Image 1 (cartoon, helix red, strand yellow):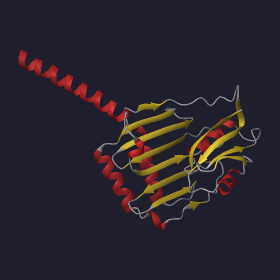
Image 2 (tube, helix red, strand yellow):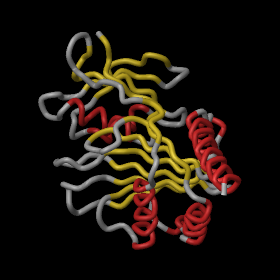
Image 3 (cartoon, one colour):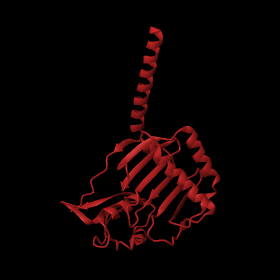
Image 4 (cartoon, helix red, strand yellow):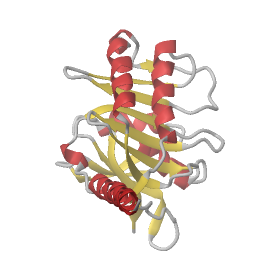
Length: 240
């Protein structure tokens, strides 16, 4: 009995130790060395829609960046179980996403814009839209949304304060765009916010200072939308 009791205690100790080690290794994961499998981004609406950016990597590592109106604020990391990862890969590989349009114009303005990207070995397919998207696209969205319900999310990076007090300009954003993105074309997407380019900050890094109408749109909501934009590398309020 003593031997069995000792073995039980040892087994529990090993399970706990492995869990701690796995959590540590997950927290220390170098995301820049991983290959993206799929992404899901949800923009804002006129209400309190959750704004977030979810990335699934090919090895099952998942990151969730809660930007606004989410239970998880900041950047979280997790690991998708192998069976669920295989199921997701099969769904993406058999969906024939290339046959669908890149964008679907919604008929209902007061709902979120959702962006889904699939990174295959030989192509990347991105589909943007609101209502009216194909059933297969909605099926993939549902599968990606379900990942948010995984247990044991680990906080990797605490959310930065988006206070517009002090020396932060409430109507100006420093935005770094992806290298292939044309800034003048990009800014036209934000006509409702009356956004315009003020100046280029670093041409080599595609870094710009943009201004928008803070009386027309809530500054924190605008920042959240820009941060969730898949064409954006980084965005923050400009410091005066």
